[in-house]
Image (cartoon, rainbow, N blue to C red; front, side, top):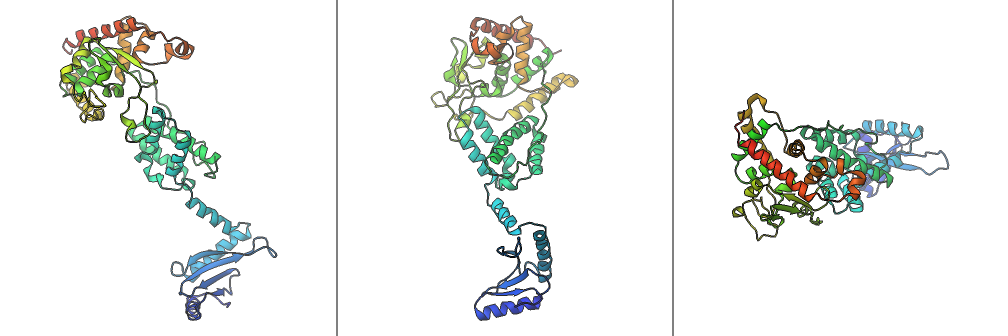
Amino acid sequence: MREKITKRTVDALRQSAQAAAKSLYCFDSETTGFGAVATKTGACSYWIEYRLGGRGWPSKRVTIGKHGVVTPDEARRIAKEELGKVARGTDVAQEKREAREKLNSQTLRELIERYLSGNAKPTRYWHEKRARLLSDDLKALHGKPAALIKRGEIAAVIDKVQVRSHAAARLLFADIRPIFAWALDRAAIEANPIAGMKGPQPLKARDRVLTDDELRAFWQAASEQSWPFENIFKLLLLTGQRRDEVAGMRWREVDLDASTWTFVPDPIEDDDDKWRIRRTVKNGMAHTVDLHPEAVRLLDPLDMKNTEDEEDFVFSTTGRTPVSGFSKAKTRLDERMKASLGDRFKPWRTHDFRRTAATGMAALGFQPHVIERILNHVSGAQGGLVGVYQRFEYRDERKRAVLAWGDYLSRLVSEKTR
């Protein structure tokens, strides 16, 4: 039938289709290419029909809406818009098919998993990358088809993370960027939404070194902390090692008679629940740390806990994982230091202890290559060809430097804060 499509026309078409128990069509008499179809169940929808190449080309029919969701007048307006696209050379059927394919394409999480499965290696770098990519920071986008993710959505995520941590935002952006480039190369997406996008700029390198007065105030504040944070924070300053390395210390690594602590990287397991408690070392190499007598005192064997446990962590509240809760402990330290220093208090980070220890040892006359070996820091004096070919460990020099630094701290903290 052919007549102007109105509500009355559609109601009559539906009744006729139900009575005939078959689908019936109505072609609009006003807009060529616009029509409606009613099924034997009484359902009705609107469509357009066109030949993109004119006579001789196959016709295509595209549904543009269901009756009840859109009115006949709304359907006619949509039909005119779609037929206008056809007149300008757009194949609206192909356009809709591609849109459906995008909606059914891999989600961002699926794309991340596919990327990691083909590229990740069982190293600390890749496990930390996986953790960031699958964290709550990207959770809102995990279930969205990757092909539909927009540049502004990624930018919003990065900006939100940057409010919390500039470094975390830089890392997350660096993690995301190669995934979209890789997906584009494999035609998993048609366009890279963050091509040319600038991530958070690097911050100026920190040069914070704690003063003698700050070290005295810190030591007193740490002494007022409960186990294990007094021990951990003081060990960080005495040894110059990284926070996670000290927190993950195991009794099997400590030789109190020799006053040494030797830790090596453990194989990192694939199980997401297990890799987090494996030993990781920044440059992937075994490292021996000499212990000042004050450090040995902080590791008094009478405090040994869970020594028969498989993990045998020195600092653990569960016996299975390293201690956590550093943020709250650091806040308590800051509050006590502020009370002692007043207006002279300046913000600091635990990582500043490494720079402070290195600066202190240098002031005591020890050479950079010795200090960098103590810090297990392969760069600077130990970088480049020297780092590759010069593997001498400077064990005697390192021990003298650690003992001299510990003696200096012991003398310093025995004085009153000025």
